[in-house]
Length: 294
Image (spheres, rainbow, N blue to C red):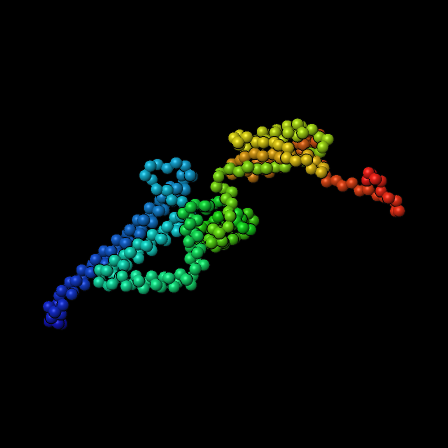
């Protein structure tokens, strides 16, 4: 046995040394790739947490801030990107022609791309949406006939939850291909509340009542200042509109409070909210109506 091993060594010592060297180099490359992947993912997670805590405020010089919606996709891309690079390096170490392999993979990629063009379109749209930051996790968006709070953004789909708890999974291409409203992006919203009074009521009194309701709480923003305007003259009423701005967390509480107080305060001030009215004229059979219509 020992004699056979010695003869094998004497015959192939160069090849055995080269193989051992290549195996050691491959192991070093693999271990380095695993460590690099773990380090990159930890850096992404740390940057994502810091980005989330910053809340959109100013960041210190040299610090990297990554939005949490983008970090999930970035982790996958970095992990598999490093593994592919390490695999190609190991093939080169063993003398395998990677140029031909890359050409074959490229041709196969073209064929797969043509077969999965819709799926790849969703991936491209997802990357663009994540890069541009059109919306983020937690934003309330509306596109097409759908609306809801963004729960997750992946390479293929955007997951929404409606206010009544319905789960919506929308392909990224459908989100990218339609005009989109982001109700959360600007941090504040303007409410517009219509108020109708009778033609016999005082407009100044109505303005005072609405102004008192608006100034009673501290939920509305002082800048831009609230506005009370005569919007139009309807068939049965004078239509007033109240416009005011509020931060997102105070928008709906302020809106519902104002709506709740309006009727009571208007009636306390002696104003009336008119009902739709119609005048019906009856004429005796065989008689023509008066020329003036009365």
